[in-house]
Image (cartoon, rainbow, N blue to C red):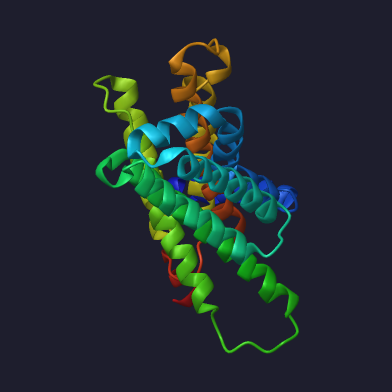
Length: 270
């Protein structure tokens, strides 16, 4: 038991050292990963403008004008929102804009009836909540000299909701294959995700999960190795950037900490 506690203590020390050395770059990397799905989709709207317009027209019979308007809103909304988030310009408005895009796509692509895609969109909303939480942390640090009446409640609940919603996307990343290695990967990943969600050894658990997911993502979703004319390339690219958003969310958790509603924070009060 003592050996286990010593091992965990050493692992947490290593995690803290990594965080201290990367504290200035980590929030930027986290935000870039978080919005990567929106960035990729916005660029795809530009590159595949005609295909996307024709698809919407064929699916909904809405006509050339409305189909074009849909693609335009998606392109400008996503790329504009991403630029604002990365530049920290009116972050709340940017997150609201990206949230609107998520809802619009959920309705337009009938995602409500597709469990996997619905879970991923809920997780994207969780990612946006974590970006909002970070912007509130920055606002609080600007007013560091002003007396505070306690915990920043909105930030705390944004972080909790963001952590919980990240689980939805992680569920879609589990591969239901009957092989020993895949079962081990699913179990280890699920345990780490539960620890992150409840806020126990949060930074260490999230850091391990980030490393593990990054390796798996570059190994299984290497879309750049597939010729552009093969449909599999688009599927792998989609999975790659969705997983990258999960990684971004976890990096944000590592950067911000678990928040007030967590076991780690509860232990401090004991």
